[in-house]
Image 1 (cartoon, rainbow, N blue to C red):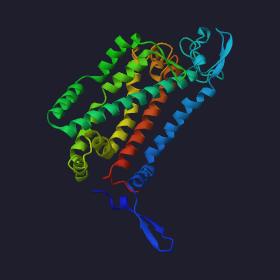
Image 2 (image 1 turned 90 degrees about the vertical axis):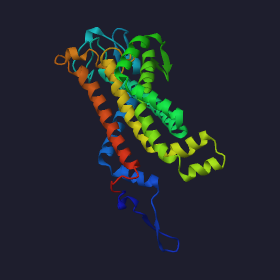
Image 3 (image 1 turned 30 degrees about the vertical axis):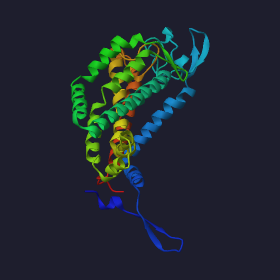
Length: 331
């Protein structure tokens, strides 16, 4: 049962000076709940810091590349390797130190963060779209369609997603050409990892969407839409899915964190994003050999992964409480 304080109306005054009561809309109620959620606000601050770092940190990512005997900026500087500077500790010239072939870690965390966030967001969109469609179609049509789609969903749940991700990245990652994405050179392994993460993470969302739509499809407004001649697609996309927005938003948020961690797993094993494309995950590849000798190799990308995952999880918890109509959180 919802808390009485959650439906507290807003007091206002009419043009004649009489006090009137304006009830909170569901959107206003969700916003007020979210703003009262302390950990969600901390998560927003962390995410804001990370996004500013990877977006505007490139303005500070510049320096002299000795092998090319020129000043470089941006991604070119991040990929400049000078073996004479390998494994240099943090200093004025390289505030995060250098890696095993002399590349600047500060610059690589900036551009690696852009790719890690891109993978996380793209895989989460893939997951939400696939889970939403399968869950909605299964629940709305029922019968053999529901049985077929749910048996397929259960079969997918039995496949170890990490194993499939490793196999896919190993055998297909190098088979795709390098692509240009808003001026960034991305290896084909980025696309493979996004697709595999999306294909192996939609099942739980599909079951949640199915359960919600099963409870909604017999409502009066759905029956009225059918009587008025609305198509199945219109009923699903205009009436049923909008009333399932809460689990979709929460799943999309948490899916970004899950995808970033999954990419870090396979990249740490040397099977993730390949080539000159940096990610926080592949920056950890080989760092275990220098845990004591060069701790800056793993500390900075590892800390950024930790921060962004914590921030996303905090925001996801806040959204879950804010969008839950039965939440007992005070507003």
